[in-house]
Length: 101
Image (cartoon, rainbow, N blue to C red):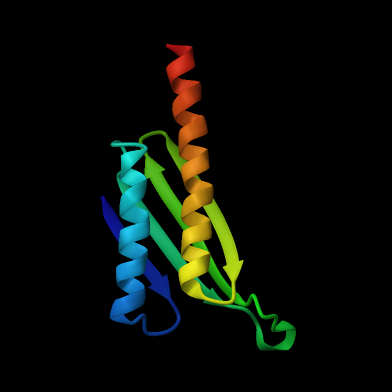
């Protein structure tokens, strides 16, 4: 699975490693994941909240796309939150596909 990280700022090695680790673990729930895209965003300065670091995660499996977004005060937490949301979607999807066959 290819993991693509998109952001408007330079992503350091540590954060890249965290993203790679969390997203790679999702392969345990589906071996059909072809692509993962991670978008890192920082909330607008006018409305700055403590939770102004935003992570959007999009996973692609043939015929389906999973998407989750999470906000936190740290990108590491937001990545974990988004990965967890996508994991739940994968499990639900897998259950639906298994029950229909």
